[in-house]
Picture (cartoon, each protein chain N blue to C red):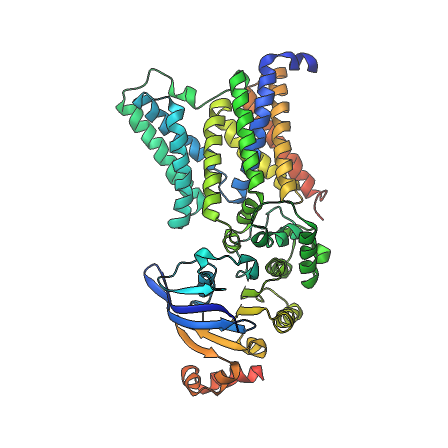
Length: 250
Length: 272
């Protein structure tokens, strides 16, 4: 199995405080990793480091074998940032234009939009069920609709690795279920590797093949069943909490 | 006033041609600056220009030779302050702008005044534009527009979401540097040609007018450029007919256009 993400002795600092410490793990092709942990545990920092948005203090992290500063496989990576709190609601762009931004990674330079690009945008719009609002301005949409636009932008290149940072926060229950089903089908049918940051351990346990529990360091990395059976996790969380998490999953 | 008579004057022709090119380049850059919450970049860099002109005069060097590199450095400095010190754009502009003014005042005071009027380097007049300046404005507009066309996708992506742009493999630092350099050259040269008031107004007003009725990013850039050109031509015509200052007339026309666009948006002509 090809290694998609690998971290070796990876540490990260922010304002002299260590945010992530000595991480060692591998994510293989086709894995569906639920990245969980309390607030401030370093989940977003870890995925930003994978994308080269944050520098490492020690060790290294590689995606598709490349250090983030030398990454050559951007088109294979689909990224959905944490909810766009800073989105300028007056930004004068249509849904179609914003989804098209995801194509840049494979275009490499500003060039005319080709027929294949238009088809890719149409596919992403259909997949996320927003074809009907493709002509609307982003600021005219609800929070949930905006989130679906950003999901479409992450999917437009048909990536091999999907990095999703709390993607379901603004979604209503039905859309959230559809989104989980969509990501699950991409993982199962197209072997897309998924790294899914969430606080919802019960739901992610239903879908993820692995759970990476982070709290500045790796507390647990393994399958959900292993997590539920682990005595050390029962000790760490307390037996009742572990039972609740695992019960929700079942 | 006969339109043909109005257009027959050489100084009017030069003002319209140069003013239109300057309007296009300021409006397009303005859309990018306003969306990145750097609307007052023009004003801030104008204050730095004051300091750098004073330095040039003190060193007995042609002031623009000192202004252009110093304003470029300041422009990059504003971006670095935002990026590294984590402060808001308006505060970063305020820091650099007040530093520019302070340096200018200190140099002017220490030099015991200059033989040349320092303000003549800062406040141009669109109606006194010469043939050479028309060519400068055409060259500058072509340079800025071609660069923006060449890097259009990168600029659009990072204007919308800089973090996502980085995660798409875009060299955000390089594009930021290019935009900072283009903005600096534009502010220094257009200030000399049409004055700081008009430069600043053309960076902000056509952009916010276009935001009212734009139906997409390219559409918005086009509307901003068209608004800038219409305001320049109409403003010059109005100032000629009723003997008003041209720069101020163009700013007022811009405000009227903004108000009309705002009213149209309110009446839901352009938005569902």
